[in-house]
Length: 120
Image (cartoon, rainbow, N blue to C red; front, top):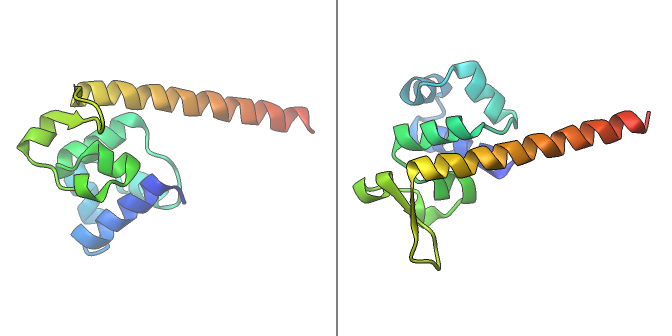
């Protein structure tokens, strides 16, 4: 299971006493989708943004596992500080970056599929 999925599982275990249904209702994502994440499916950028927004946690925590960034205060809801840099990006910028990452992952999966087909 990838790190993002493990962190989602940790959140469900810690904040929702392991109750997938309660987590699903809170974030507004269908429970079967949540179960797919717990089985290792990587959430798309819009779902990551939704989870972070609804739970008021930083994208840095969910994506990178930075414990100090897990708790989100009102200032962090509107911006994410980039460590080592004075620049800040807002949540819509974060969504764009996540979408680009999703696109890159999709391209890599396509390449893997093509390679697998070529080896048959």
